[in-house]
Amino acid sequence: MSARRFLASVLVSLCALLPLPAFVHAEVAGSLVIAGNGPELTTMETLARAFEKANPRAYVDVMWDDNSKPLELIKTGQAHIAMTGAEDPALASTQIGWDGIGILVHLSNFTKEVTKQQVADIFSGKVKEWSELGGPETKILLIDRPRNQNIRDAFETQLGIIGKIPDSAKVISRDESVVKTVVGTLPPLSAVTYVSLSTGLSVVSTGVAVRLLPVDKIEPEAPTVRDGRYSLRRPLLMLSKKEPHPLVDAFAQFALSAPGQAIIAETYIPMPSK
Image (cartoon, rainbow, N blue to C red; front, side, top):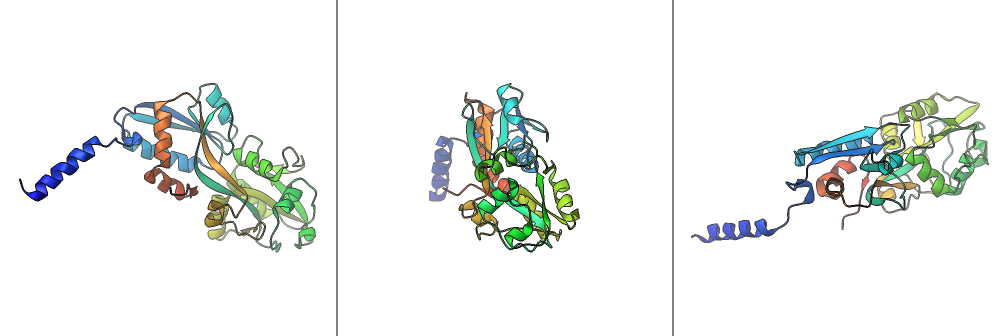
């Protein structure tokens, strides 16, 4: 036997001893239901299709509804995984990435920047005029998100304003409608809202008449979200029941694998490399 053929034989034998990654394991089969109501829909659908391709005997149903309560669906057994931005002590949690929370205003709003405390004061109704922040002589129109959406939970929690956003704030669910409202609000009002950073950066890059405000002198960008300098951020969490479940475990491992993190990086900030 030649040296080259002998070396190849040894490598094949060694590879046979190595465990296969969970997401390509032949025993991974069955149906998996993922529930959510936030902006992660496209990412989760892409992850689901890639997981199915790697596991032909597995089927993933992505169940998304703006008005749903994903955690309740987990607890009642109607779904296996819920996408959220906050942990629940009764459920297991796996973080698969980060998302910034961008403060979005009209392009004509010349407010240079805000502090995290000023964002809290804006959305709790303490600051009512942009001129108080060095901006235009217009009243602040607050645009809020529905109570059940995980981005609102993370936003209120980080700012310490849970339950303090005024009832007068306009509540809008879909990002597209939120952006259109900010663009279409004219003086004497000037709108402000909070959005997934991926959404905010996307609309800014395509020339929509909006801008993202720096917070505490830090620009809202992927690198500053990843290292924590931009403090308005939320984890992308997959929550599930604490009991082991082969498909849930396999999907979580896939999401954290190189192919899974590459999919997440198309929209969000992937986990730091170990």
